[in-house]
Length: 164
Ligand SMILES: Cc1ncc(COP(=O)(O)O)c(C=O)c1O
Image 1 (tube, rainbow, N blue to C red):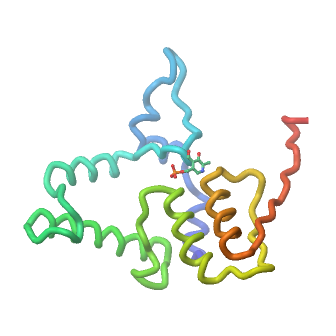
Image 2 (cartoon, rainbow, N blue to C red):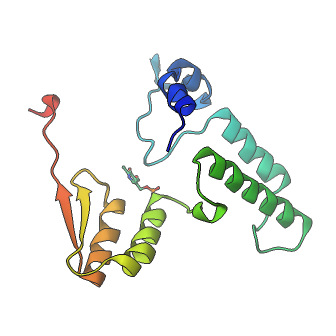
């Protein structure tokens, strides 16, 4: 649950200030046409802080996380776990164990569908989704439904003014 101060912060986001943090948004899509990017679900653009952190990591700490016993691996593991702590606080997660890193949305949805889904779904259960979902959020639920006897149902979407 968001705190009131967090809600106020969200309501007062300054889009120009946020845009200034993303170097790629200072480039042009075509000569004279500023870049506007809306495909964040496929690939998110990175703000300067993230680009610098990635740079710093590859310059000074790059190593196996949780799988090495040398100094670099220890530094990488500490940085990785420190990021988890920050995320726990940022999303107000109930515990460190509640924050699980995955490589992408597809892997995350598959993980939930096959672990939670297979353990909890029963014949007669309904998984509610929408017709607007990307297949990364459809196929894992269809497979989980097949495995458990549940069914997947899709909410239709209304046509927008632009499509009528
Ligand atoms: C709308 C949308 N949802 C989900 C995904 C899947 O995301 P990921 O590549 O993180 O698995 C994509 C990827 O293009 C997407 O465009």
